[in-house]
Length: 510
Image (cartoon, rainbow, N blue to C red; front, side):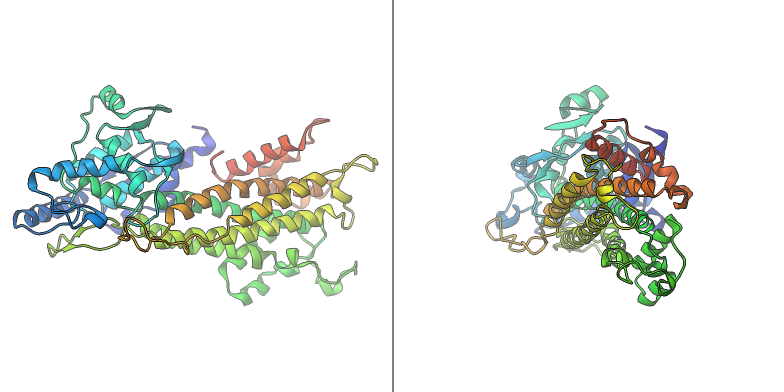
């Protein structure tokens, strides 16, 4: 691992205490690289207690969903004792219907961690030894190969998570050593006996929100980085256009009260040295006030910052939740048949993030167009010289607009698309996995448009020879981008370089 990425090393201990709270950054660390997790003794003790409750219920003849009955619409079926272990294996088997592109090894590792954390709440009636087995494979970086499609985000991510349950049994495939291999051969190589699923254990692994939650947590970190880069682009644009600091003054934004706008304005002010004179005392050059894409930049981008903070709260609650069914209360001994597997909050959080990212991308698009218009002392299209054949970044402006439109396309909400499935048993569903997958796709485009914004901003600052008025932190980060490109170098190669640069600096996966 590169030194710049070392902060993403994962080492956590999962416990029932407040200090054991697993956050989005922990999940992101699992996405970035292998890690080590451990379970505190009280976690295993609670798991054992909930397991004892399940066994007592079965002994006295209680009806327990997914243990003594069939699944979903087939919950009417009574499963005889001799078939109950086979039931768990059949559940995993018939859900092997995933499709679409595979999740990356890092995304799959994050999903694995989320499932462990949820089962570690100690109310799912899995054996403590099963939790320890899952942790052992995680720490050895034996990761399930997960399909991205097949979940409606209610009754959890049943189909994708069946691939995790299968891997634990030495079935289907696993990521190991950077390769996709048969799970059985990986476990054999490590000298590990595949797990034999006990009562409810197949259901407990599958009937949860681990995939949609893990993808949301990863995206949350990237969305936070995007918000900061939006403000840095606003700062370079404002500086290059000779804007006053007035629209970004802290007094103004404190009156608006929104923390995101306050932080956005602070980032803009802190990233460069703007003209401190009041607009009313500055020399008039056209309209007394700058366009909204400059004057309202904090009020626009601040929405993304506040949305990130709200989404973080919801996502972290979901990470640390017990989200399968049924659940077993270790204190009262009661069994609860319920619906914590419903991913509604994550579906909505990802919808809100995509909407906020969309408006921020539109802001970047408009600011780039302002720079390309040739305002003030800037040459039109930020052309390098006066040659009649030099069209500068004209094409970059067009491709930026295309990207902005595509990013806005991803803003359409998914959480409103519930539809009945599974013979009507799942008659409302969250579509949380679809929403989180769309967010992953949108963020890939977001970093492309941010690279466009940084490239245009650097060109404009260089053209006005005002690099010294950028903050030392920003200059240090962008120093490679300020190096003059080789003669004849294509713009697309510059954009790729800048995209890698801005992702790397904030610890985002290249």
